[in-house]
Length: 119
Image (cartoon, rainbow, N blue to C red; front, top):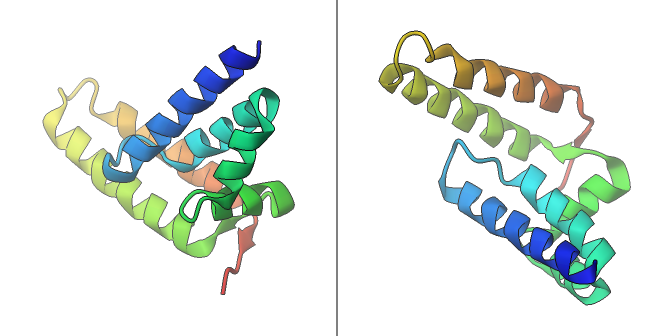
């Protein structure tokens, strides 16, 4: 099972990294899922992820506080609004509301999470 967790963790981390440049793909949930998978598959990879300068802080904040930094929330909301608008513009009228509805649900979930001040 160790290899299954490592492969799942690597795939989730890859999707999270792609999500940095692709607005419709969220970064944070995939990185958190990768951390979970690595915690079950390899302590070394989990420690590498926790020490990573880009991904480590979000995993540590989530594990310690179940909180998201305000700046991360703001960036997520803006990118979801922009990508939903673009999807609405280019998708057929009968399906154009789906990305916006999904992003609205994610935005509401994120709004309910505690906010951490990372100064």
